[in-house]
Amino acid sequence: MDKKIILGGWNDSELNKIFNLSNEVKYITVNNSNLNDTINEILSRNLTDNDGEQLYEKIVIFHMFTKEEVFDFIKKFKNLKLQYPIFAVVTEHSINWKLSYLLEHLIEEREYFRKRKKDQ
Image (cartoon, rainbow, N blue to C red; front, top):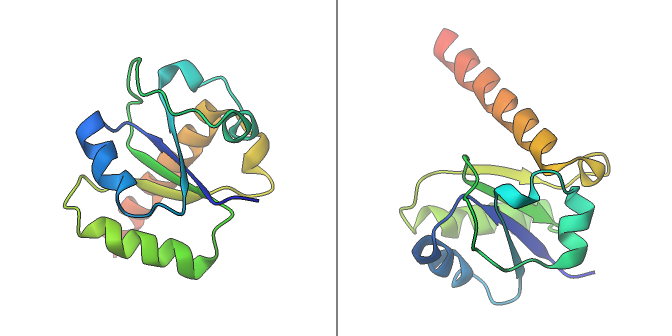
């Protein structure tokens, strides 16, 4: 199965920078019209149309990547000097979640860790 990255919340200029990080990856872009789609549906349709209202969060979601490949990609991503997104990996559970539910979950998780870090 091919390596895929789901991207949301990025404008065309930002997407072009991200696309240039690797040509061995299939990039899939999502927007607000995809919020009710499951991650599995998004992955199977290979969406690349960036028209439509942007997601309210910048996301980069990896599918079929090893841990090392994720870390390598994030390291290259940091050099782009773009706004730091929510990074995630598709799991056996999240693949069946709607994008809206996954986003809620990821935002809650991010806020939990931000609060925890601040409290230390």
